Image (tube, rainbow, N blue to C red; front, side, top):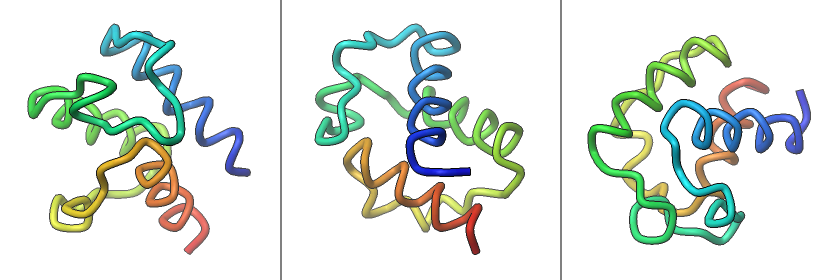
Length: 81
């Protein structure tokens, strides 16, 4: 799976499942401040990512993930490991 596919999958579930504003989802967008993801959304995101990409997320691995692009980087590294 390439980077573009990962970004599309993530963007789609943010818009469809969490009903977030697609126009705010850009590589440089901050997850909390710009896109509007809150702590409850993160719980849903973990479940969705684990189901769609087939790996477990460890919360401590996401402590430095602040941007949409960093979140996609994290997913890309995990599925290509």
